Image (cartoon, rainbow, N blue to C red; front, side, top):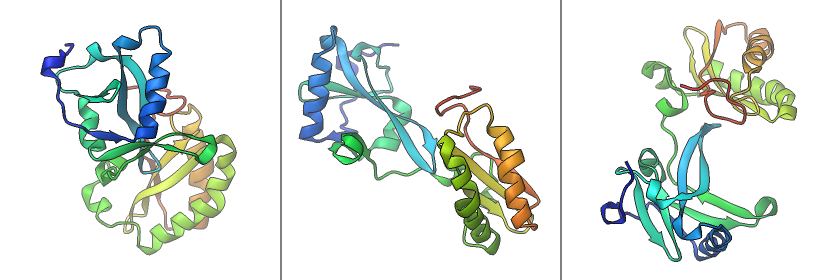
Length: 219
């Protein structure tokens, strides 16, 4: 259901610096339907244990009852309901790094359950400081990630059952959502890890492949 301005949630979820406001305002002004548009900010997913974001222009009238709507100078901002808690206290600013652009500075981080959905709580509680975890991380950094970096991919250990030898991995970048990711995991990453760490009995992919550059399935 579309939300009227009168029913809008006026909480300022994401602060926007003056420089960023100018950039956004100039960009909206170039749109043919500028008066209808708002800046939408939302968490798109999780990659490498960090939130990733979508920033886009969409009609303010499309906002729903649970979305936050507030004014940021010359334009409105909409934060979809599911992203409010994840973005509360964040700041949108301009950065000159990598050629310059808008970046989100967010004090919030994904919970272990969000990073590794489906991993038993008792396994998450073991952390990544055990001997198998340390060795697995070293192998990933030294041998696995350099080999898949050429495709923009990365593999991270997000949990490990030290007693059972089960490692839980999250793939990101070019490997997240890629239709070949299962082959990469089973024929590349898994083989490398088990060859160098015989104590590992199983490698489990906990990546959310519904997001990413080339998602091959959606929930």
